[in-house]
Image (cartoon, rainbow, N blue to C red; front, side, top):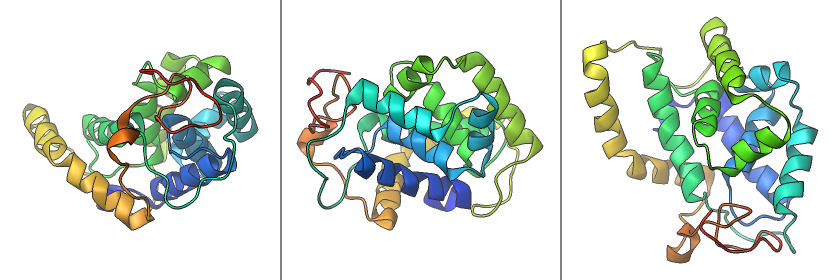
Length: 214
């Protein structure tokens, strides 16, 4: 799947890792992906968030308010949480639903806001964002000025074939996400890293968040 990512969406994922380190979080959650998308500053997601009045400083402040900072800087590779991985899966579905076979920052943002219970949505809610309006904004940005670079040219599948095409691609998504992690130098989480946290989205301690189911 990584070969489908535009240059902007690849950069946003790398920036998400940096945002996690900035807060001393030892996982990459949806809140970090949101920050990475806003910080990337060039793609459809950043433009839509900017038009909604959402700044990177506001995203960082709201994330820190909800989750807190970690006690110490993480060492080694930082894994994606299950919900962050789910966002990467859903970004493919969002792209295909719009008739694209590349994954841009806008598709990643659409995937984030489709997960009602993720931390990124809580961050956006805390900043007063209207998710319906934000979805409309980012969809317009994708259509008006799609991300450039990386991934194959857009291809619009026939509607009748779309469900099967989506299912076939999602059937192999886990192996492709592993390839993304290896490409970015991010290791797979161990068996204990799959649990969700009430504040963040990992069983690892992000700085005092109580453990829970998310």
